[in-house]
Length: 193
Image (cartoon, rainbow, N blue to C red; front, side, top):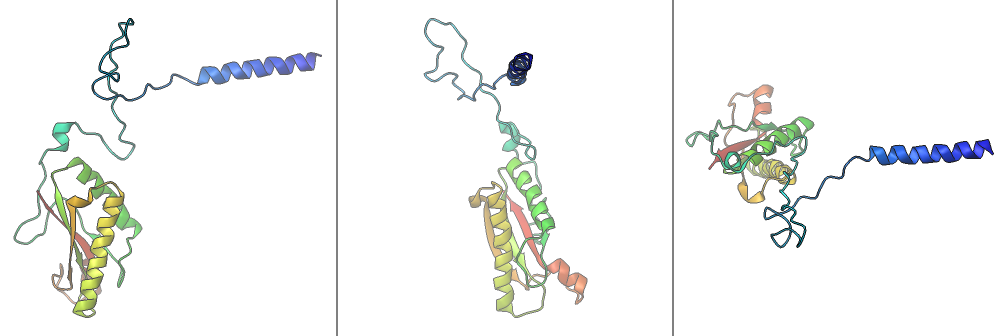
């Protein structure tokens, strides 16, 4: 009998602990007008609910409306199309597949683009000088699209991104070395307003 009583006491205590650890429920987010219908329920005199901020998650920092629309960024040089706030993403020889480092770079770009909503980006696909012009134009197009598609998958609006392929026609480094070839296999980001 005492064993049964101990089990009942243990279950009751466990239920009490579980209910105490539940904490408070977070109230639901509401539209800026407060409770639906725009006023408090009749006869209660309760104030309208205040909208709660939406969490941006661990990787996104929420900005107020003024900061999100600000144009406090540099654009790429209109003559050289170089510079700008977004670094290049590099590719392996004859590949248009994003590396882990390339995806990490694009994740930083997506965060920057979410915080600079006035920015428009042209994603350029580039190749090294090896291969035919046709082959490199097609490969450059695949590289530009891979970068653009990954940015879109991270929440960047597709209408802010366009792609172009230059193949091997605009090398960043004109030297004939493996180091130069590596720098030329890239997706380059031209930022404009």
